[in-house]
Image 1 (cartoon, rainbow, N blue to C red):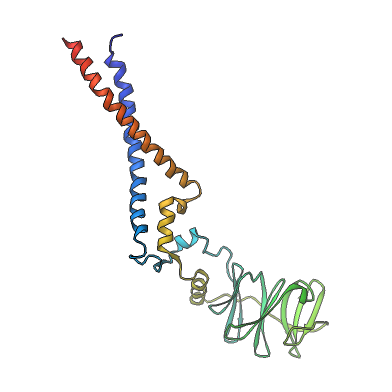
Image 2 (image 1 turned 30 degrees about the horizontal axis):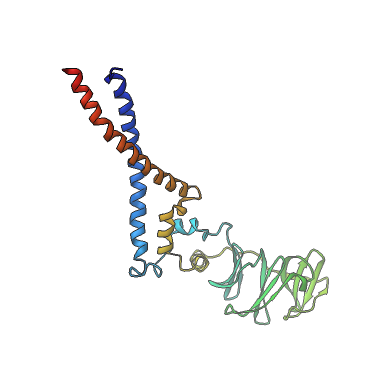
Length: 258
């Protein structure tokens, strides 16, 4: 069967185009993997474990950016803030898994911060004294306040209840109270609370490792990296095929001209 250069050329050019583009994309991924791999191998010498990144983009990617806005209550000389389930006094982290805040008051020199299903009793310096769970409370709390006589008052799904400053015994009551109300957190304090929420940030060696494996960019990206490895095999095979075909084309082309 005679060699037809007109039919052969489009097939060869198509293979070469695929070879070129696949090689370009695979090369970019391989460069990323190579550079991050070298840095990871020398992470200790480069002190990457102690180097942290606090970029909002990075912290959001790692789930360190709070989703709901803060819930804050202003007390004399202090701010109580719930941020994404964590409780802060000013910028001091007091408790995690702190629920949904409904109010905070000062009682006998201590701070009582109420969530719907628990109350946190702490000093004005942010030291947690006691955490009262739901079964120790008279019901699900909707609001907390202070009665005219100084007692702590909570409005629950079972009605109004009062207690002393220790919050250990609750009695049903019909009293007038000054209820805790929401207040906008000052911008500078919010930044301090946000910094305390995030912590020092993400270590650089972890970021490099997640870039190296593709996990930083999403759950599907590691499969792209796997595809890049397969692409390298394709490049190797297609390169060998192109190399083997080229001498045959030249010899057939020269034979046809004689």
